Image 1 (cartoon, rainbow, N blue to C red):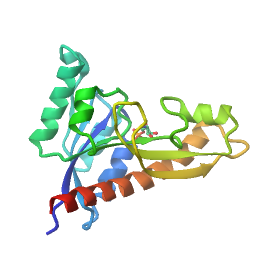
Image 2: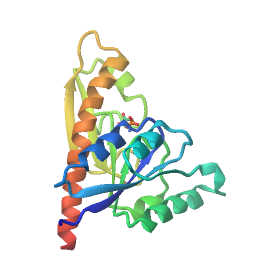
Image 3: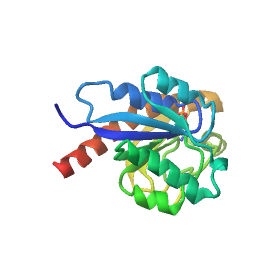
Length: 197
Ligand code: GRF
């Protein structure tokens, strides 16, 4: 049996990228397994999706803690308790603090719906359309203290079509997100596993 690297996924919403990671990890040769999903939003759609797939899913609300550091220390404790080695951000809508980012340096990745370094932050599809971009896409990157700024591990491009609206463009990008995020996780897990062998 190959050792599978344990992964925790942080979400805030519908969790379609989380679901893509869980699906990919079903393959017998996938080098990682999703052992925990953490949402900061109670009732996030992704929680039920995870549970339906047999993955433990919990909610930790920031308001239950005195400050951001305490909140993120609690997330970190849940991840450690399950032996998590890689954290995937999948539509996690809070900016993580320095201590958490440093704790997971090189082992935390994010999917962002733009061709980074273009369009960091929110409303990426709106901005690409407003600029008249001819192409758009998504990126998987290592998470660093600067928002959407870490080294890029994978990217996919899609055309922007003349009659595109935000929803149409977002849907075309999302298909690519679901394709490249598992690929990037596979590579990172292989690297981490190889480094420990
Ligand atoms: C995705 O577009 C992702 O790129 C961004 O937030 C969105 C999350 O969607 N970071 P989902 O929750 O994975 O469906």
